[in-house]
Length: 578
Image 1 (cartoon, rainbow, N blue to C red):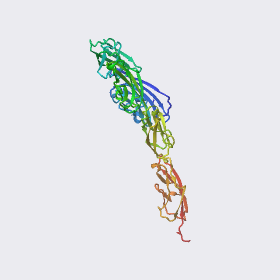
Image 2: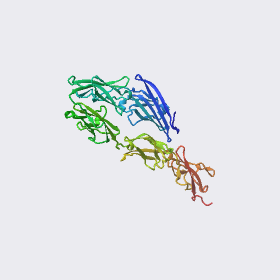
Image 3: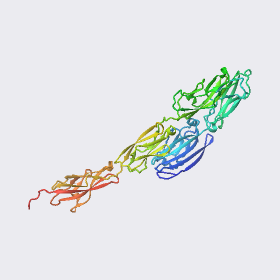
Image 4: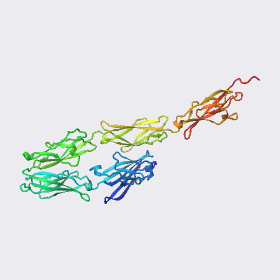
């Protein structure tokens, strides 16, 4: 479907296109979805989505955007089609010659989205003459390009020989930057003579990895045990990572630390100062002496938790050591470990919810704008399209925009976070030739934050005013026996238009005086409006006569008006008595 300037009412149109290509030895599924609606004030809003795998080579085809939007290549070129995005535009480019979207730079899903799924790039394609825009979503799917990784290659345990059968020892979890089927799937522990591996499912879908004692330890027989923990993902082919576990067998520490809660919760406001106490966790150990001394630590590995929080090893107090930004992370999950001197451990989880403060002003970005508009523009003509964003949440992120009153323009909300500035009444360049329109956007936070931008709009002239003479008619005198070419009188007309439309020319209209063309008596200067005598007048032959002069502007088509001039001849004593 090709739409250019027509005002149609389309409730919803959905087209699904499935394309199959071979990529990196496996079949890739690319899906394009188009949603299009035409707004009543004159520009098209549509939405198309594609799905591609990460790591596609530079220049790879994403989709035929011209076909999927129902546009012709000519429309893309003449409409100066371009990509508009708030985020980085380094990944996608638009080939207007072919009407396709291409991979501009290699896309690493893990760099772009980390563990967030689905992972997608959002942008708009803007067209001009008439103004239109379409929302595009490119979803990036994961490939198995990362192996499971432990933070440490080696971990040491000191375990008492009196540890009972079934004693649990928390192991460090591996992390895999991939997601879905390519994420971490299984663990294996070898050898299994003394210990077996146990995985516990958490409500969040992760697994706690524990090493469980199944055969008593005997320090006198074996003072050190070496185990290998292997983490394997579910990709094809599978990838894995390993960690060496070195166990030093100690004497007589038969009680593990126990946290008072398995899950702790805390709430902290973003931008809280460094050293703010977030929470305090506590574990107890039934042993005595050095065997009951507990050391606290944070177990998180490949996230930003340990850059933001620290725990006092002695008292379990968790404090801030970095800045928290609600717009970057709305919550943190801190995995904590309590270990006694004998190496026995217990673990718990601290969930920190970050509360938003109104610390971001609304961001105003001009998507497309006109600097000049004709004074005969129809009502609802789109002048400027604006994109609004506020990184805060809820009321702090709800933004409303307005312009000054008593202007022939209004702001219309065309979609979520998009506004259009359109004409609301007729324009008159002769009344106001330029408008400075200030768009102000305020959020609903307390206190409210705002930002503004001023748009300068010139009003171009159309020839809508006729020349106007200073008088409805003119009357003047000339003494007989005048010299031909004498300047008799000057008439003047003005035009309220501008430039060529206001340039007035004077024309003597055809008529006759006593059967003789009026042009034989007088002439009119086209530029100045000065009336000249063509001949010498004789009072005894003609005492007065009148003629009409037309004032015509330089517009296209020209506008004109007429005026009557009466010329009276005054007598001289130029005849002797007969």
